[in-house]
Amino acid sequence: MRGRRLSTVEDIIAITSPGEESDVAVDRLRTWTEENGLRLKTVDVGTSIDDVYAGEMETLGITIGGDGTFLEGIKQFAPRNVPLLGINTGTLAFLVRVAVDDLEAALTEVVQGRSTIDNRQQLAVEANGVEATGINDVMVQHVPPDDPVDRKITKLDVFADSQYVGEYDGTGLAVATPTGSTGISLSANGPIHRPTNNSSLEIVPLHTHQIGVRPVIVSEDTTIRVVCSEDADMLVDGGRHHVRLETDDVVTITGAQSTADIVRTSYDDDFFTAVSELLGWGARGSEAKSLPRTVAADDDEPEDMIERAHSLAKEAARSVGDPLRELHGRVEAEEFKTDKADIVTEADYLSENIITTAIENEYPAHNIRSEEHVSVESGSTYTWLIDPLDGTGNYANGNPNYAVSIALLEEDVPVMGVVYAPETDELWTAIEGQGAYKDDNRITTTDRTELDESMLISGYDPDGSFLTHFYNETRGVRRLGAAALHLCYLANGSTDAVWEYDTHPWDVAAGVVIAKEAGATLTDTSGDPFEIYTEKDRQELVGSNGHIHGDIIDRLQHSEQLRNTIDN
Image (cartoon, rainbow, N blue to C red; front, side, top):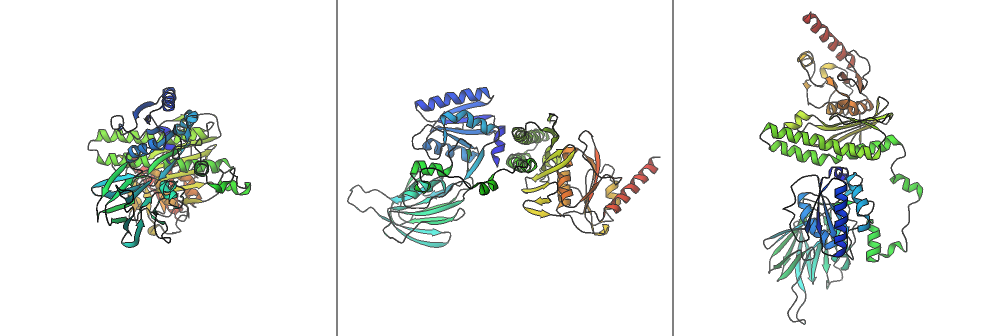
């Protein structure tokens, strides 16, 4: 999902291994970054990136080498939430799947927002004063004896949460992630896991002397404790962390809170190709097959353009969630208004850049209009209206009521809308004629028929007249400060009616589609159907469940008449 966010990359940090092929790859990378206006910083493998990493979200990590270099990259980039792409100059690389010859094409795909990000489960381990994180496995094994004829086995007691799993009698055991399942775990007859977005851990006996002891798979939030009956060695990710354990020492292992974000492009081999080619997996035979067309069609992008645009808008909206949440946290921590303003401006433009880049890549012929004055006019019948941060005032004050709004208009009629609330992770969507949804659930407006039983939401109310005329006549009037959310709450029945004094097209276009598809009635204050006018500065909007609409319009018109009488 966050692949779209990579369109905002400005800095690239490359961890490089020694070797002639790596030097060639670095030269090609340097040329490509210069041509694309990006900043490149390189460090040798084994060197900390602290001196070159500025803490910016617009950073992409790259490793140039084999899997060993890639694991070093994960160790450094994962704690900083920096996505990582591996360029393969090694020999038997399993994690790194982009060839040097595909370097430029793969990176171009990344910065165009066309790549994806695999969230790889990591494990966290504590033992004997050592705290470490790994992406592959933890091994607890017998200390090799000085005399080769001495005893080579150990006994380990294993607990999963508070439950006793049993005694492992052999050379040791491994606790592996799905990514690590193709290494030590596989060698010990453990199962292979497809690692993409897979959150689990497996306990695998090593050279056990009991034929009935088999690998055990547990959830990533299970706390695994290994108790040593004698001295043992603990190795994380093949020795990147190594500690000697003593009798009765306890090793505590669980899933790490942070994942490793691995960038995948169309130039990567897929997981099963890598398994087949590198590990000699025999299930495929000599070549890969394709699904029958009738099945494969279900996995392809829909042929209809509106459907595909809908999928793109949902992906783009969710992809800005992480950066908006991160910057929102910084707003809450800032003391001075000027600093907060800078952060809000950064959030606005970052969100807009991610969304518009995604649209321009997929639909270069479409018009685009945004609140932040991005305007692409191509003469198309299709226009995207975007509010990258609806509820800016809320955002600036640390209030969670803000949203991202994306709409597609055919001619001047909204036909698709997506609204996403990052802080609550709620997604409202609609396509004209297909109903409205909150996440995956169909939504409808309320069926209340009496105004005195209804809850209302108000937009900007400059003279307080709406509050004055409706507060005591209803169950209350609320104001959230985000028009897109107001309309979505109307759509899913959280309010019975909405009034907006001052709307702009990008504020309400997506919400209009969602509310209408949920059954709402939308008009202006005179009762005429509400329409999106992309060139008009300001419009009033009245939305309701339909049953109380006439009563609201009558009261609004009466209020207007009173104001005119007083003014005259």
